[in-house]
Image (cartoon, rainbow, N blue to C red; front, side, top):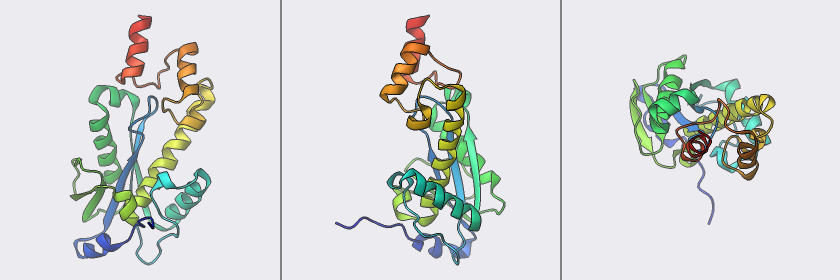
Amino acid sequence: MAAIKPTFELETLHAKAGPVAGIDEAGRGPWAGPVVAAAVILDPDDIPAGLADSKTLAEKRRDEIAAAIRGCAIVSVGIASVEEIDALNILQATFLAMARAEAALKERPGLCIVDGSQRPKLKAHTEMIVKGDATSLSIAAASIIAKTTRDAMMRALALDHPFYAWEKNKGYGAPAHREGLARHGVTPHHRKSFAPIHKILCESA
């Protein structure tokens, strides 16, 4: 069965309402690091080739496409910190990152199409698209920007905290990350509200 490819159909359908922004996030599941959302308004006459769900692309290819997106589209990023994740919970922190991404757009969208089923509070009219990163080119572009932005942040954090292999696992609970926690403990970049980190902190108290 051929893979479903994202299209520009929804954006074209709603074009009369104003610019359509695709919004997606990266980093809901990791044990460390922020959650990052991106908003992208594509130019219908200059859409980069190769747009797809970021999870289906190799890292090098994601970085190449992200550069192409930034070169021809309106792009913004919103970030919610580890402290905000712990204070709000990961879902509400994700919504906050999405709202920040929308607010940072240089052009106000007439519609935001968002990957998923749970609706963030955005200023523009919002439409949720389940598996939107696989079906909408704008959401696919946002998924690539969010993923590459967060990956770069985790590689930078890994330079100061080299024992957790964040440059490879991006903060997810991979074996090298678990080993780093066992040997070196919790850092300020760990999500203390997440069960595995909370357990470590309780055991060491």
